[in-house]
Image (cartoon, rainbow, N blue to C red; front, top):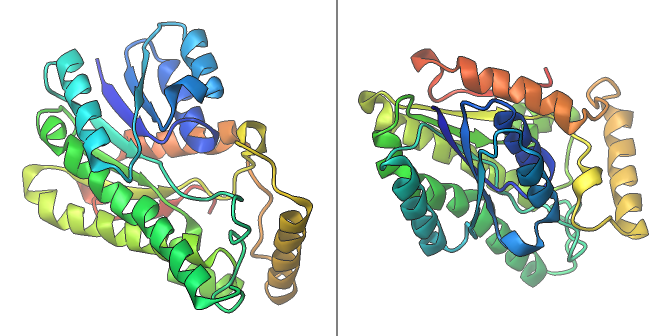
Length: 269
């Protein structure tokens, strides 16, 4: 009976990963949220899971202690083992209006510093906290898979080819997260671990968004995308639905073998 932990499962890609994994009654899925009581979309997925095989756990990836507590609870439920860790948690929100800023568009260096530090805590350190907490369980698991849900925006070649200057804090810290994946892959390869990063591509997650973007933020995004299209018109693809994207992501997860450790791939081409 395969066991999965999905870190960051309240909406969007993470939520859909939980839903599709739960569709297989042989799976046991542990899904984390920063606030379980307020995670209404996750509650619906748990309620509708045919095999009632999803367990919600409260976790904030910035707080490594909360991950340790979650790992202890999973260990109690599984006899101490976990087969697959899927780390999806990321900071990508509209709260402060800085989401679509390029490096030169922040109102001050103080604003840039604050945004980058917060993004680094979630997007980079969060992945380290997650792997560290669950590594003892994964060592006892049958597949020893660690999957980081990444982004094409963290890949140098993609950013250069598309001329993408926006999402500076998100892209830089997700790029660092890809190096975290590589470091763990190098460290754990002799133990038989498979550590890889997968990008779901461009996904329309508006259906489960915590809050919609403001008119100004929509205008920022449109301006940025129009600029990219002007430079590289063939590089911007239409967003996938969460269902479409996650189906491809999980196909990759299932197929990962020893030859795939330390690799990054995008399911959107």
